[in-house]
Length: 381
Image 1 (cartoon, rainbow, N blue to C red):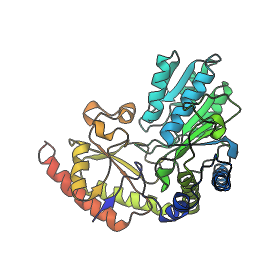
Image 2: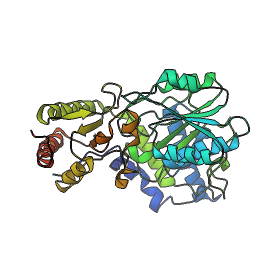
Image 3: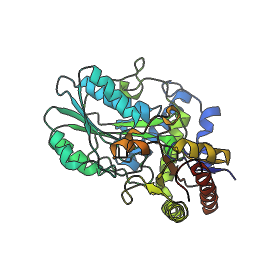
Image 4: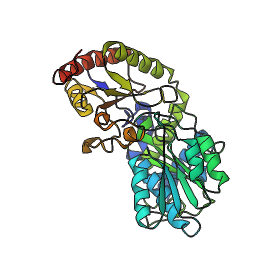
């Protein structure tokens, strides 16, 4: 049996989304920037996608900038806002547990003269609000805190964080990639200035994402050479991907996900009862319903992943962007795990196509894998 439990890395493309995209590959393939009728048809599809997404996210459609994914969106927002407003303020605050596509651009900005500060989190991955408030001052230009952590699934209180940010006159960005469809994203009511999404995290196509940009604020592009997306992001529009993203987002919020929490809790209950010396990483309550990040004492997480893969089961050790680099997770380090525990973790993330039969097969296989690997260590069942 083949089982896919790495849905935080990417999801399977929904067939209904593919069906919606297909005509824009083979029939309505015009360039949205062209003024002939095929270009106009493509541009109409672009506008309709923005309108649909704006309705779902409760934001103005002219603030939606399509990108190649959330990594580009994060880079565009963080570098673009910082460089365009460096004469006003020079400090950027980011949480310790951000995705690398947030951490890398702020590191680059640090080399350019910006002051970078990292907001600490507690053992559950929650922002330490008292520490955060102390860090906020009139020098802070931008605060970036992810809505949901990609490794441990912890949900942040984005509305409170954005309000505190605005009280000091700073701007607020959130990487909301892992939030769809589990959390309602209401940009206007949550006072979000900038937001990033990636379609392939919610059963849409790879290679397309968006940056919500409050266009009241000056932002420099990071890709030059065209006037697409109001001059903020140059490049020929990926119309099939954009159409697919809008459809995937619509379906994501239309369909219920309560079964995922039931499946996840069932999986965790079985694991706790049948596999000794394991622990859950992250907040047990304030986390998205498909995420289990589990520490297996005295076993390398990569070893478990590889062994399960030979049995047709796909799981992960953390962020898909860094999982092949075999380095300790900065997220798990930030929540206080000891050095000897930093590489003993596996992330199981369920999706809407998973079944109870698959969960049973995974736990049954996992028990055997853990027992075998622990036969080489001091921990015995």
